[in-house]
Length: 252
Ligand code: BGC
Image (cartoon, rainbow, N blue to C red):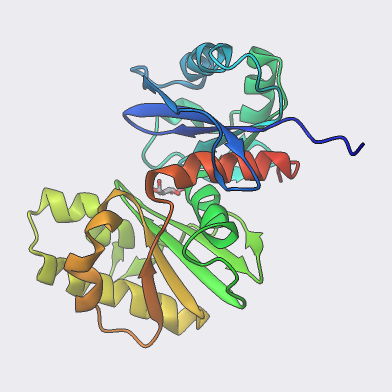
């Protein structure tokens, strides 16, 4: 009888909550109800590791690899940027720290890369070839570039400099909230942003994720672009599912 690999576990580490669930890789869905624990303050890697231990202890039957999203650049398990997280993450070998703390095989991945990978495998961009750019509009702007199903990690397109500004400071959902922008005014900024991506990369498709994508009817029709742009399908599941998928494939 064919041996089936143990189910992987996905953890989505965010500014307010740390969410985790075992993931069914055939379905691209949670295999058990997701658990959410408040993010510790300050959210240093060591304190976050303690939360992961508690979280995993709630799923003793799930023994596979663990994937963890981090909102920063991750190379070979080491966190290389910390735009919107505690600065103590910089230079942390997160794969090693979390593997030692939990006794499990842990692979850390950029949050947008995890979400983008899941959208291409199971969600809005399933079956699409060529270059798909998935962006997450939240506190910052995250990006994932996936070409013919293969993830090119750490693209960090939220930090493109446009008109002298770090793009995410003008076009992220946090900028819309902070400046109380109407959907129309925000859509103008998004048009400038996505037109820049079009010029640089000529993608086949844009997928828009992040919490605000549930309101995509309010702003996507207002964008003036040449490229097809659609909302994400997995919404708040994308991080957990994508992290588990990434870990199950051995990380990067
Ligand atoms: C970070 C990215 C992250 C994005 C979304 C940006 O500020 O540089 O690594 O993917 O925010 O959280």
